[in-house]
Structure formats: structure tokens, C-alpha cells
Length: 299
Image (cartoon, rainbow, N blue to C red; front, side):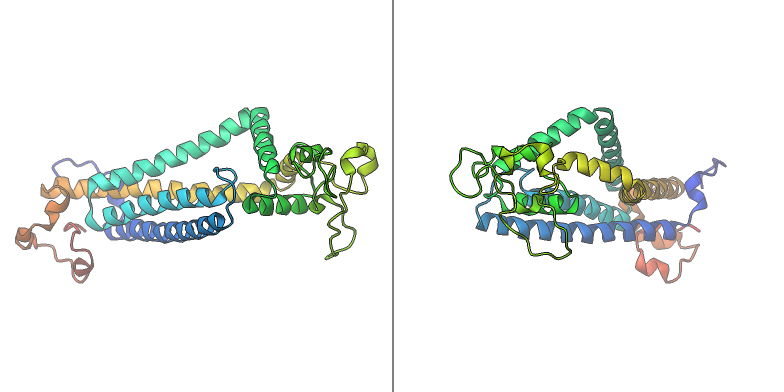
């Protein structure tokens, strides 16, 4: 260290250990980001083949592509920063992770504080998707899964299906005034679905449908499921937030460790790679220096 006798927190951690942790962390999320991006591109290509609807909400493939690009680019910056000990890239990586973490926390808090507005926005988007239910295979598959999984029908309630041109009571055909078969109540496991079990249900009173279809809306059903499975959701949230928090901490420790090395030897970033470094070889590094040629001569 320099003449300053102060020992920074990062100085208690091994440079090699921090470098390895940051590199491993970045490379893992770089690969995950590339995998998500590939799935998103494949899904978007398939979506375009079937001429499905445009829009972020109606196209999960777009969300996967955006998420994959962000993870791929940010993680790649982390890989380069950990290999080169570049303070600028290291700080960009750390600040980006911090901003993403803060935005996720703020988003969750705002969604809870403005719960009614969040539910209203969700119901509005579900109704918009119901309008194009048979034209958008992505939304159709998601809605069918949600209705079967949570035993529900529609967004706010089952009458939301009246906005669909095929299920509206003024429409011709057998689907008029009905709901999709995924809204129907099944009494036997693996029972073959009756695709017309929701025939003319929109003409009947709510209490007359209790044994025919699920009259509860999917929005309410989903929030009830969250309340019943709060431990699972807490574990899922921790699984998303903790890795990001870990990345921020490791990045911060590594940045301060590199800054200590720069203060000690008077070199900045890639200056540690200058060819006259052999003149400062009083401290031998052994084989490690062959793996990390940019590693300052510490420890």
C-alpha cells in the first residue's frame, strides 16, 4: 500500500479470488443472456411465420429478446472488465447492476403501493389480448395455460370474453355468447375436453354457472395464488435479486482492490501491462501470473 496506513475493506480479500468470482459471475450470466436471446429470436421467427399480433404484451418473444440483449451486453462488459482490470468498464458494470436492482425494487414497491392501478392496467391488457385471442397464438397459449392452472376465466371476470368477435352474443356461429373450453370445470383428471362446454354461458346468470365454468377472473385468482404461495414467491424474488446484489458487492470489492494496486504501483488500468513490469518483479507470482497477466504484483 501507499504511505497511508488505512486498510480498506477490499484489502482483506484476495485479488485472485475476487477476480475469479467476478469473471465466473459475468461469464455465467453472459451465457444465460445468450441462451435467452436465442430462445427469443427463435420464438419471434415462429411468431412472424403465423402473422400474430404486434405489441410487447402480446409478444413474449420481444420481452425475451430485450432481456437477453441486456443480460448479454452487461455481462460481456463484466467479462472484459474482469480480464483487463479496466476501472471504467468495472464501474460501468457495477453501476448498471445497481441501477437494474434499484429499478426492480422500485417497480415492485410501486406495484404494491398502487395495487388498484396495477390490477386495472393488467385487466385492460388482458381484455386487449382477448379481442385478438384467436389471432395471436402466443397470447392464446398463455391465456389457456393461466385459465387451466388457476381455474379462472377472463381477466376481471368471465364476461370479458364478450369483447371477442367470435364470443360476442351478436356473432354468428357456435362460439357466440360462449367462452373457451379452458374456462370449463373438469371433474376428472386427464378428462377429454368438450370444446363447446362454454356454449351460451354469457346468456345465463352468474349463479347458474357455478358448476359449469370458473366464474372467477384470472387476475383475482392469480393474486389469491400469490397470497397462498408467498413462501415460493419470496424464494423466487430472492433468487432474482440476490445474484444481482452479489454482483454489485463483488464488483465494488474488486474495484477498490484494483485501485489499491494502482495507488501502490503508480500505474493506471492497462498500465499494469507495460513491458518494464519485469523490473518490479521482486515479488514472484508463480504460475498465477501466466493466467492473469494483468494482475498487479500484490499478496
